[in-house]
Image 1: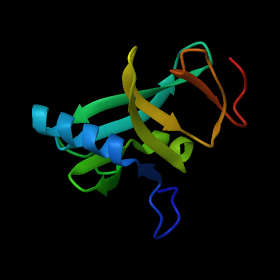
Image 2 (image 1 turned 120 degrees about the vertical axis):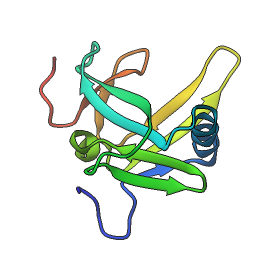
Image 3 (image 1 turned 30 degrees about the vertical axis):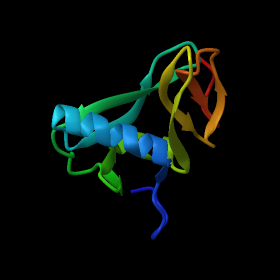
Length: 119
């Protein structure tokens, strides 16, 4: 919807693709739907849910067996984002390397996008 022809709206690192594929296989899901919603201390936060099927307006990105579906209202906020997955001794989880983010809270789960009024 907001993409450039021939260029995926998001990229998925091999680590993220492997984790998404594991989650899909474990739960029998069609893919991982990502989006954004109002909330958190910076004003917006990412959402992630395993989905049984894509919505008609979802943007679908596939990498091997991994499938990411981008909710329509999130597409303009996520364009150009790299989705990664990392594991450390203290935590593991998905990371969004998003060029559209102006600032993030300390925990990294709440974000404010460029040209968005502060909360």
